[in-house]
Length: 143
Image (cartoon, rainbow, N blue to C red; front, side):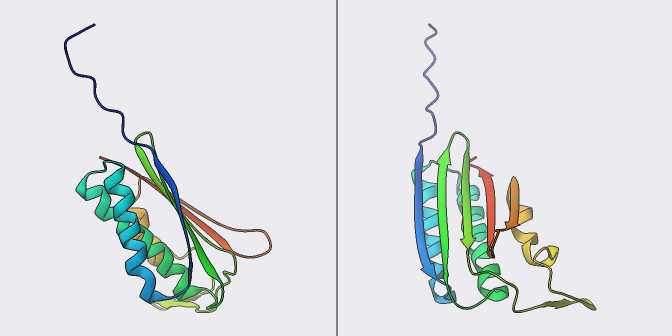
C-alpha cells in the first residue's frame, strides 16, 4: 500500500425523476433540478452549467415542436464519471414545422434545434418511440 490518499469515487446520484406539464414557465424548475443533481454528484461548475442548458434545451425542443398536451418525463442519473439526462415526451409529434434559412421541414432531426445539446454533451441520442413520442438522452462527463 502506498501512503497516497485514495481518490474518492464520484457519488452515485439518482435516478432523479420529474414528470412535468409542457409549460415553459417550469424550465426554471428543470434547470434547478439539473444543478442539484450535478452538485450532489460532485460535477465541475462547467459540467453543471452544461447540464442545466442541455436539459432546458431538450425540454424546450419538445415544448416548441411537439403537441401542447401531455407531460415531459425527465430523468437525471450520475454514476461512474457521467451524468445522464433523459427527456421523454410520449405525445410528441411535430406540430410546429421547422422553417429557417430557406428550409422548411417537419423532421424531428433538424440540427439547428438540437445543436446546443450536441455541442455540450459528450454523447446525445434521440429517437421516435413506437406509437408516437420521442426520447432524447444526453451524457456529460462530470469533470
